[in-house]
Length: 388
Figure 1 (cartoon, one colour):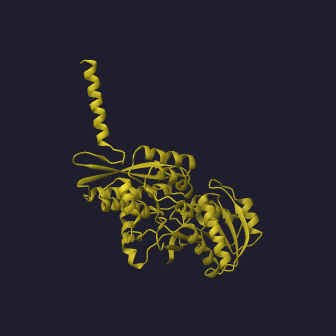
Figure 2 (tube, one colour):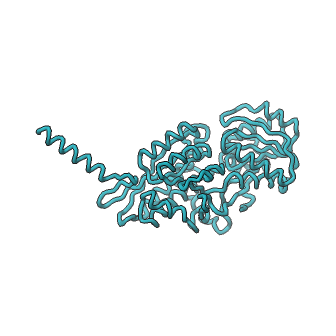
Figure 3 (cartoon, rainbow, N blue to C red):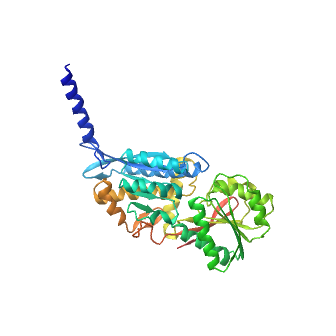
């Protein structure tokens, strides 16, 4: 074969590849549209159990979408899930976001942690990719002026302040000690809790700091014990809360223990062991369903356990809804091109998910977000109230 002929064939092949994948992220053929959804969560590290919970929620949604026979632009759609691990680490989160942009995904669900979600959001915004976080609660995320950011849960300002008032008004605590892990999430929810305590007339007697990788809390707990608080609040995740509770018991620190959705997991009892007494721990999960929404959520939880052999930890239902909602916006726009379906996603109002009714405000925050207050009894989470 002559060199000119070889070059002509190579050029033709290159043009064919370009034709199958344009700069909107849509890969298509004459009879099929491939839509790629990116998902990022820590699937390694201390909170891998939460990251896998999220990933399984995404996979469940993708499988159901592919079984539904959805069409967009007159073509049947195949959804693909591109999974990235950020290990709850800023550097890894940034790299994961860039890989998804380079892969020309049509949208992103994630990240799990506030700090990685916020950092990645500018990358997605610059690439004009819609991002729905199922769990990032730091208010900064949707207050950057980005039209590409959306959130399915109430933020820390609402969650922390509500728990602060609950500590004083319902649990009848008078004095409070705070510990946070210095992450964007931990510090943010602790700050909001402190404001809620002050608004309800409570008194802050100590504020201590740790990290999200610490294991020894003897020094800070000894300092707190000297103040004899009625309530100890921890801003952080369950992987640290479990050892904290064990060391509180060892030091005989008698106080109610509170935290946000980061500790409010089905896995906390195993992490805390026999230090988790009934009605000792109180927490709030960002989200929750009232009586009308309970059948749908119960069915999701049962289907999830049957499929994966494990209970929902916290966020899987929100990831599931985020994937389904993104697909719904594409169908409403009759396009998987992010620029075309983004305006429809922003106008979402009254979407019925397993986590309840989803409508977005002008910042991309969920309107009238619910909070579920819980305690633990017999090693199981027990719902106390759903409040808005």
